[in-house]
Amino acid sequence: MRMIKSGKFADKKILLIDKEPKTKNDRTWCFWEKENGFFEDIVYKQWDKVSFLSNDFSADMFIAPYQYKMIRGIDFYQYCFKEIEKHRSIDFLYGEITQSVIHKEGITIHIDGRMEHFDYATIFNSIVPKQTQIFGIINLLQHFKGWLIETPIPAFDPSKAVFMDFRIDQKGDTRFAYVLPVSPTKALVEYTLFSKELLPDEVYETELKKYLSDFLQLNDYRVVEKEFGVIPMTTRKFSFCEREDRYNIGTAGGMTKASSGYTFQFIQKQTDQIVDHLIKGKPLSKIPAMPNRFIFYDKVLLDVLDNKRKSGKEIFSTLFRKNKPQQVLKFLDNESSLTEELKIISTLPTLPFLKAAINQF
Image 1 (tube, one colour):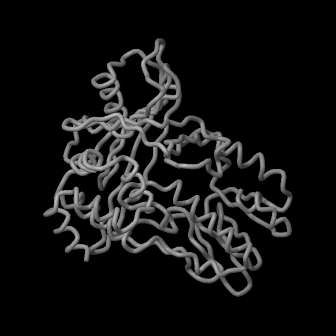
Image 2 (cartoon, rainbow, N blue to C red; image 1 turned 30 degrees about the vertical axis):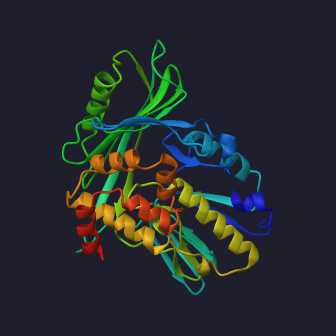
């Protein structure tokens, strides 16, 4: 979409390969932003007030100049493909990729049992390599199931989003719910946890029902849509540039923040830089990676969680209790200064984070 909008790539042939056409509302992206973003036209709902809830600290927080924004998957797909289909230089290929081989003459892709050969091309890959167990590497998963529910009578305050609700039973992990009201009678309710293993599907369903009943006092509702997602939270290194004509993007290119799972806005920054470098003829290998100090912060937090030095509930409660929400969001966006970061770090419990820092260092 950025290549199209720039108007600089009309003479280039572009091939998009995906497993299947995108026709379902299979996911929701939520993120915070100060300005109007690249996909502002399809922001479904936004809030300038968010709630943080836990047993020992709860608050409604105004986050201006930030807005917490929601984009629905189906709106994103329809918006993008409506534009993409106007351009004859862009082709589509659907199927399961089992192997890809790069050689001097180009690339050969094994897809759905057949081989497709393409002459020399610059390749952008977003398929994440399978996770492997390596000594010293922390591998957690952020996994979540969400229901878009509708109630017969008003049950939600659409002026604010529940950003994190840690009042639910943690069961030894980091578990929270969030509630994104789009109207007084409709909201997306998600059950999220950080752990090493996924849960049986019926457990997510049971926990969602329990949350709606125990904390929202809702028993009369209709589930309109369901979604499920898994995001890697790992100290494993992902590289953007494999060689001068092959690049990894998105999660595969290191754009998922390891300590929180946030990805959408980091992808926006990365794709903006890629297109800018392509237009200016600058080597893509010169695009700066995520700053090392933020990678280290993420590793330390994952070490704290993985070794149960402190619970996620305690950590996030402390962050939002002792810091302005804008500063926390800026920190989570990797846009804070070193001075601001040291101030935030000083509000966290010293001993568990010091032990984790030494371990990761």
